[in-house]
Image 1 (cartoon, rainbow, N blue to C red):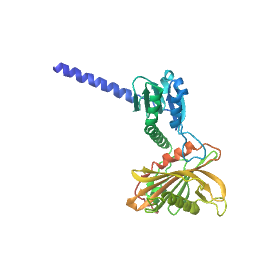
Image 2: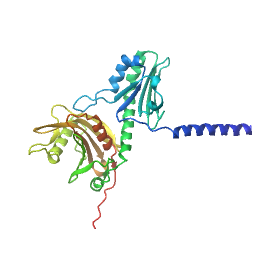
Image 3: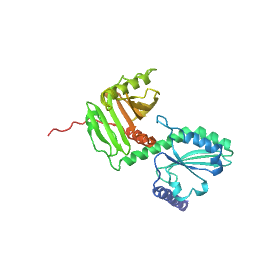
Image 4: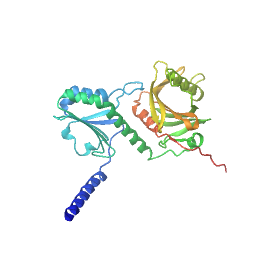
Amino acid sequence: MRHFLIALVVLLSVVSCEEDSKKNYLPDSVGAINTLSVVIDNELWKGAVGDTIRKYYAAEVIGLPWVEPLFSIHQMPYEVFTGFTRSSRNILIVQKDTAVVTGLKTDLYAEPQKVAIIQGPTPQVITEKIASTAEKVIAAFKKNDIEESQKRFTRSLNRETDLQEKLGIALTMPSVYKIAKQENNFFWIERQIPKGTMNILVYEMPLSSIPEDSTRVESIVKMRDSIGKKYVPGREEGMYMITEKAYAPYVFDAEIANRSAIETKGMWEVKNFTMAGPFVNYIVEDVPNNRLVVLEGFTFAPSTNKRDYMFELEAILKTLKFKEKTVAKVE
């Protein structure tokens, strides 16, 4: 019995070491943000199953001026899904099989990675499973991309400390973002891009500014427009940034920095001038300091796709951390 127990312990140790070794040697995942590899038979891809995948995973991103898909999809049949192709960060595997299977795996072939697996005996069963799991799987893929974006920010960080000194908060963002304007407790942070700018606004509002009733959307629009009038002017007097009048923005409950928040996505425009673009806005409760912290990202990039720009801004805003205010030393 003693020899048996020793042998069992050795065997378990070997298996554990092999698993740890496999995990330690996973390759880095690859791919652009907002891309998805779909592994599926060509015939299924051309039929109802492929149509269902595209319906959910290439659905229109809300709050943009024209149609752009949630993911840029790269389809491949299973027989070519080997080697380097398995290193994609987000993978959806769809197969016809006698067993019905749905699952979401983490770091299966690379790291970080999310792999969704859907199997079924008929195209009808498969399409039903695609539809029923889409919300959960898409959320996992998007979270994976947000975290990857935030990781990439650390390669070259913005080191400015003004947000912490004045507002007691911090955002993690690349060094290409610079404070362009600071007035009272309002900050305008800007990044130059080839055909325009990416922008972040940060400011405070009273805790009771946005009521939890049917006037919530109206109150958010009023808040944005008043801030635009005061701090975001246009080229001439009487021009300033407002919420687009033609369409109501999309408003959702959210959570940022483990605090209750309101997420708003829509279009901005300049009053009395033909200039517009998309925005994402987060109103975050800061009860300990009796205030709302408002974070907004918006893009001006005429005739350019904006999905990836807005996704980067969203990733930055979601790095929000509350810190103690610091006081700059006076020499």
